[in-house]
Length: 110
Image (cartoon, rainbow, N blue to C red):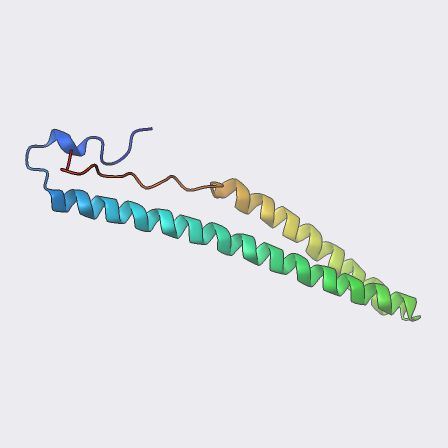
């Protein structure tokens, strides 16, 4: 897969500093993509845990003869669970599972 540094050697005035800057920016872009991916994954897992917690509360309310409150909370909980799965699907379709590895500049600049 061609990268941003592949065509850099064609230019006679290509400096080592320019290559270093491109490599640094590629590493930053890779780090940002990876952090964004894991932050989204963490948010979805946290949302799933909260939904399971409220589902347990709904179950206990129904078992304690508070059926109306438990049913309302359970309905909201099922809607939230479905929303999490729909949102997770859209997030994981937009973000790549792994960001591309940063391209290495060989020693000597070429």
